[in-house]
Length: 226
Ligand code: CDP
Image: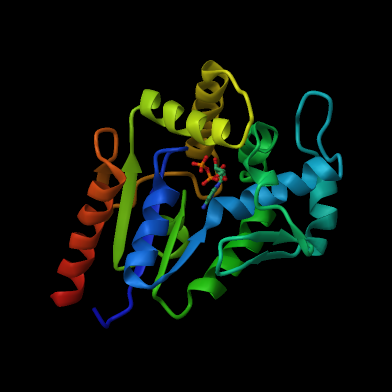
């Protein structure tokens, strides 16, 4: 496999996009970029700066005033830094998950992050996952995968991840957040979550991680050898 392609993976919250993207990048010796982590970084910044009112609404004007001060760095070992601070674990909390989709509706935030994403993927050999990767960020990606899974399975997977970090969250709270984010992400004006016309759907509900990986690797093989 010599030709290095661009792989875009999109889909709903907690359906296994990052897990698949990471495994695929490792198998192909490509770079993996979790674009959602960047939106979570901006959401974390808003919480730290208290740019959120009592109702949990992001203060867009305040955020936009400080946007140029936000510096995000992602390292090859999958750590993410916000203005030199390692926030890799801090962005995975329900507190961040509760406001991230509001932040992701803001046009200026998206422009800034998409610019970074373009720079990271300019040489190909990349697997990037998110919501608008196949539609907006890399519309010419050679392989586009749209991942889905049942709400029950998505809840169970996210709950297990949260429990592993020692966070105790009720299952119904997790489901509520996933569905709220899906709604905001698919109905926003700026780059809404939607399946690209030429994306292939992968339903991960009944598939193991290994089965998902093999399915995706087969798609890559078909592209590279044709
Ligand atoms: O891992 P999970 O599915 O929970 O979400 P994520 O990939 O970490 O993304 C968090 C949030 O960032 C999403 O719910 C979207 O609101 C936003 N996002 C986006 O708008 N565009 C992207 N390319 C990636 C994430």
